[in-house]
Image (cartoon, rainbow, N blue to C red; front, side, top):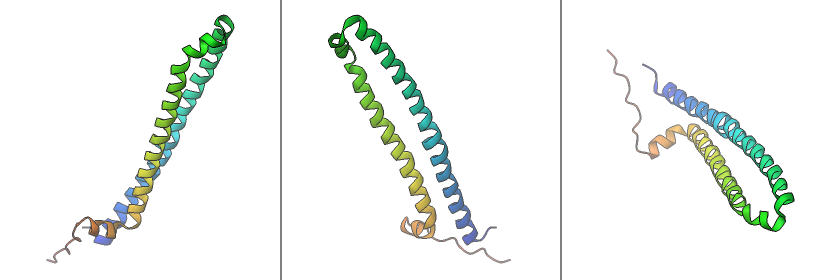
Amino acid sequence: MIKESAQLTLVALALRAYAVYLVTFPALYRMFSILHGYSLLRADARQRRQTYVQALGSDRVSVLFRPLHRRTLYFWLWFVLTSLIYIGVAAGLWLAASNLTGLLTTLGVPPAAPTPSP
């Protein structure tokens, strides 16, 4: 069997590895991918808006594009909130790995019993 200190070290290492994964893939890669897709969509919408402004006039188009403005605010709200959650969970895992013994004691998990000798 693995000694208790080695088990805690392995669990702490696993927590930190998962924290690095969360920051690397969901937080950075995925959120930047979403942001890039949004910026492409926004550029396309601006281009189309210019076409509509030329054809219909600025007053009529601004009324039509109000829902798009609301959607932009919703996007940024959810984008920032999701990013903060990813980073917060990763930071929590990293901190939990730093004080794993104290955390387990606080949660009421008893220390491992010694391995009986034959």
